[in-house]
Length: 286
Ligand code: C2E
Ligand code: MG
Ligand code: MG
Ligand code: MG
Image (cartoon, rainbow, N blue to C red; front, side, top):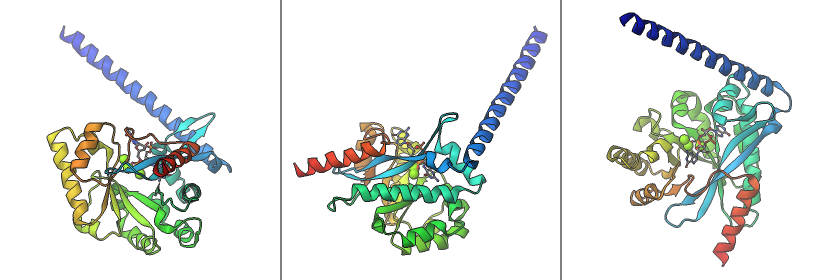
């Protein structure tokens, strides 16, 4: 019996080992395929953005959007930004991609604000690695597609903290130029209050994992603490990943400013986002 158990354990170990090896081989092959795809001259044209609405929590008014990267290739299928961004960073092409994303987002922003009574912002996600050269900064300082306060940059807390020394001077320039900066996925990195205070921030986004955990007492206390930090630093608060009305009402109690999540809307194709803006406008007039 003991032998049998031993045999089973060994067998299982071997199966898991080869399973792991298969997984690894598949992941490596896909990574190489994506690298090949990104080495072509035309990969930038496969990039498009979807736009997830961000609402005022108190009034339900549409305030703006977050632009999210989407890539589709007939052979590779859909490539998630979570998969794509690290690869493109390693290929040292993140600043090309980031600039392209910023330009697309700026044009979308200009188009939804053609009616000058609109002041809708568009947030773009920025990788600190794309700030290692001045391409984005130069473009930001010279573009006249949109008013600067309407293009906001999101940088994840973890990436910000890892690259803090290098990027603070660049963030200062971006902020001085009139752009707003938000710290993304807040609570998942390790920033001290002192380090946060040293950054030219306008807002903070509470990570989806904390919103998801609002129904537990500990989760609620954590979000309360995040809100207290935001208030202390005079930052506006966006809660991301809001999926149900329980979360919504808790966030109202906590005086969170803005919300984003499937409860309100999934990320929208450009034309659907534009249509939302138009119907929203109609509602306000009516
Ligand atoms: P993020 O900036 O935190 O973006 C929010 C992510 O949560 C998006 O995933 C969005 O589709 C998803 N989401 C929004 N609401 C809900 C919800 O209610 N429930 C759930 N389960 N998910 C929700 P996505 O589009 O897959 O993007 C993943 C991450 O990739 C982003 O996280 C961002 O860090 C990064 N990313 C996206 N676009 C870009 C880009 O243009 N440049 C860079 N550097 N990173 C990007
Ligand atoms: Mg983001
Ligand atoms: Mg986020
Ligand atoms: Mg997140």
